[in-house]
Image (cartoon, rainbow, N blue to C red; front, side, top):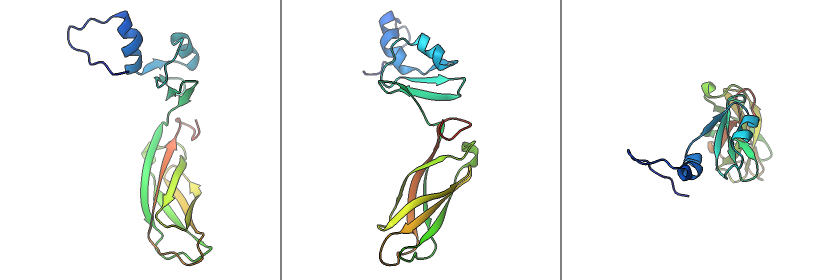
Length: 160
């Protein structure tokens, strides 16, 4: 469905409320029970905010799914020295402390090194330490690019 742009003087009809408005706003509800009473039939992609959980959810066509409460995409370089075959080196990712109230989930890790496997070693609200494991038969050069994403599903817990 296309979005409707409202103009001064437009008449708001019941049909508009049932189609456009319900899909162009974020409804705020005290709990999922209150939302279930207010929204008899959710629409795929519809978004709501729950004040008791302090997070947003979207309807995926079957159930309400939590949205990330905080997210940070990162790209860092490291390690500073070559990594021998069968060994690993640690790379630190500095996370924005103000964004996370608990240690976030780290996902989507990738490196520019063909033989490196990134493995999460430790995570706090301010730092993620990633081990770059060399699975190759020879030493791999230093200064690889590591990318990934840190996210927290809801305030207070990483998983939501």
